[in-house]
Image (cartoon, rainbow, N blue to C red):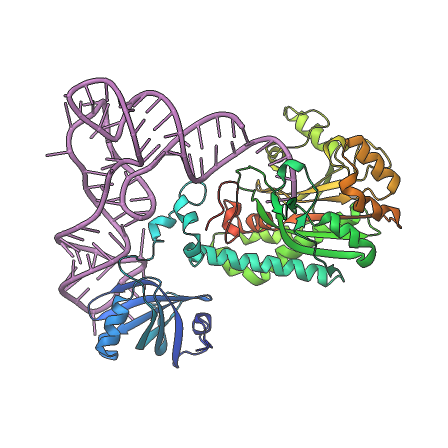
Length: 443
RNA sequence: GCCGUAUUAGCUUAGUUGGUGGAGCGGCGGACUGUUAAUCCGCAGGUCGCAGGUUCGAGUCCUGCAUACGGCGCCA
């Protein structure tokens, strides 16, 4: 039963003239009485198959003529090069085996009309039928792009002697603000789903020195935007003996590595969804500029945008700011009052912290947040007290500083945000198989 | 939490100043030996989101509710 021949093999021309067996699903289908044209798809592509009544037994002819969309079939036949076939090759069918029938009373619900571009992304119907929508061309392409990006993250870090390291998903305390924690019952106590690997990564930093992960993070944000999910995949790294600049250099190199690999591995897929490859080349080859928070605020004020020093830069301001950039850029040195305690104050001016965000162009916004950590015991206690944060839940975190603290830092990258940006998706939901947001946990 | 928009057949939708809800796709039946989202003929399929109200009469006007989608704050 194992499958050894894929549609992409046939389309490449390597078996033209051969008698072959193809396994796949019926994508489309048109018949003219004594001839049937059907499009067979598998994970690698689609090919036109032709059944002529004279070439096969009546039973086989009828079964392929009546096979509904998404029926699974095994077709035997001869591969022929033919200019009239989309893709240049077709299969002349001689034998048909229907493996999984589709019932006419409940035909495949995802029709062309259901996938017509309705304003601003996917309809409720497609979201409800996500389990079936996955097998359509656009979703299949997105999943391949996503896989390439995950692979690139692993190869970037592993090629540089980073150790992959896992943190728990059940945690007792917050990384970000407490309001965005998912609370789960835990044998009579309360636990939370993790928002970030970071605090646990810092614990392993003295052991491994260079570490990374790709894992889900959970944020109970009610945000309904094209860049938010409640469950997203988080690529995070942490390095010992490094500061903000080193971490930023890794962030830039990682993103460029992802863009370059994506061009190498998935150019066809990018083009099939209408993505301009020149943009991806530019992201792969350019340096990413770095600007300080103060400069950004001045620029915005110069443009007449209402913003006061100390205020965080929200999405609308990011958009104004990134309008004139055609590559990602870093925003650094935010005011201390806008950031949590684990960001290290700048020794040259402690109004600021040593941090950075990487903002993607084309209006996609923040894809990376990172920086240097507050690494001495004295400084971390001071920062926690300044913020009015209770010490107790962070005792283990403070301990790390009590036993040979060293300068260190890291970043977190929203993998779906990167996928969404590089693929040019309208909505972050398009790049994850089963998206989770504040209103949807099904299917 | 806030603001906005929508809800008509399995899907995408039309529906005028209130007067017996139309179409395309998909499905079923038929014709057709080179189609490209094939074409042509026919058939089935609707508590117009739910509950009230106004009216001789409501898909259409009003009120409430539900659900969804879009956006904001926050963030990756």
